[in-house]
Amino acid sequence: MSKTFKAVLAVSAAALAVAGSAMAQAKDNNVNNTQSNWAKTRAVMNAGLQSVTKDVSLTAAAIGNSFSASLGGASKVNTTQSNTTAVTSDLNIRVADALGSMTATAAAIGNSASVTIDEAQGVDPAKLGSNINNNQSFRSNVVSTLNLSGGNITGNDGLGINATSAAIANSASVDVNGDVNFYNLQRFWGDARSNLNVNMHNVTGDSTFTSAAIANSASVNVTGGRQVNINNRQYTNYDPTAVTNLKLNDITGDVASTTAAISNTLSVTTLPAAARLNVNTTQMNGAETNAFANIELGAVNGSVTATAAAIGNSVSISNLPVN
Image 1 (cartoon, one colour):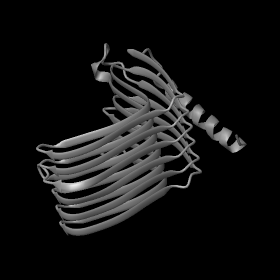
Image 2 (cartoon, rainbow, N blue to C red; image 1 turned 60 degrees about the vertical axis):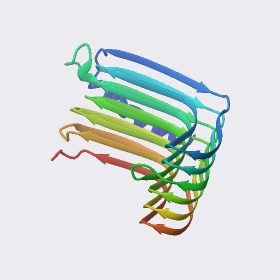
Image 3 (cartoon, helix red, strand yellow; image 1 turned 135 degrees about the horizontal axis):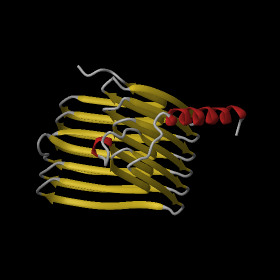
Image 4 (tube, rainbow, N blue to C red; image 1 turned 180 degrees about the vertical axis):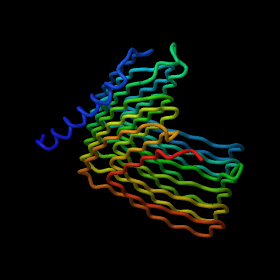
């Protein structure tokens, strides 16, 4: 570890300690979570469908570590997740003559943490200030693959096909009503790869196709807070790659395709803007980030929107007033 890297860690930790001291008080809830997964996690589904009279929904999901907490009152949450082996999801579908819509999802997730806190619903509604510490590390490959072929999809309520392949190494979601200190550390060493292969014909209804490969993702939403302190550190060393191979023919409806590869992303939203917002964020990406889309369309009676986006580091902060 370089001196510069150590200095970044020390500064971020010191900033968190200072921010946390402003809200040091007893909490209604104390939650401590530690999860370590060192065994391969794999979900596989092979489906052949013909002459289905209603909607079709198929999901293959593989998750290494998952943590979810929904709490009332000022809370202290510490969650640590580590994964050292591969997480893979494979969904293979052949479909013909479906009289409803088709929804297909292949999802591979290494570490997932979700925390929701409503401080106004606690034992003492006047007690404000929650502390959330999230530490996630992933040292392997996370791969999702969705293969969809066939045709004659009639659709339902304007939807023809919704197909998603998502590979996410580390994901953290925080939603707080009240004041909060959020400390986030996410580290990824491995390949995150999403593969979406579609060959369909004669589809009625709007269709959406998504291939997303994400190394580290953190999302923070705060409402009714007066003090919001966020310290974020995200590190990626290997390659997120999203691939879409899309072949469609005889389509009645709009077609939207998104291929997105992201190394590090942080999203912060606070409402109302009266909240005092302090954000310290560090994102370091040493990974080649790739988004590849190969699209072949024929006889589409509708609009076509296609996006291929590769993003190394991304931070989005919104602290605007409500009109």
